[in-house]
Amino acid sequence: MPRAADGTSLQGIGQIVINVKDLARATGFYRDVLQLPLLFEVPTLAFFDAGGVRLMLAVAEDPRFDHPGSILYYRVGDIRAAAESLRGRGATITSEPHLIAKMPDHELWMAFLEDSEGNTLGLMSEVR
Image: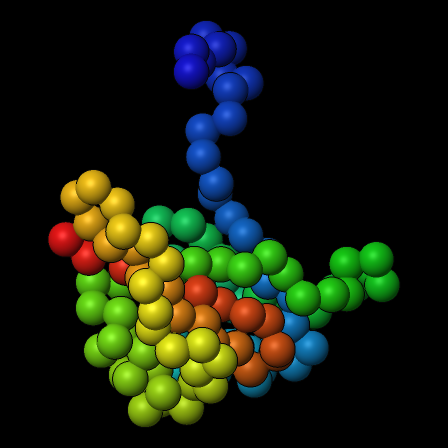
């Protein structure tokens, strides 16, 4: 896709908001269970680094936005080990690692878990 010379082209995702009910509880989950690096906190928000994409945890200030978010899929090298590690740190695995598709050069595997706020998170692994 060509880029506009004036800097108006989209350049990828910079930040994703995850709606939470309890900011302290959610911050603990993303920091301690998922072990994402906490970038910074302000009184009503917490920011994490998810592989170069910033995740912002926020309590919805407007009822229109007070709902679970889209499913975020985190890449992992060993999906079975990752699911077990997360389970050991208190995550609820809602769907064990399973084969989704056999591609010409790899298999696509996924598993699902819930965060502390009821949002579904996905794990994905491209197994060669």
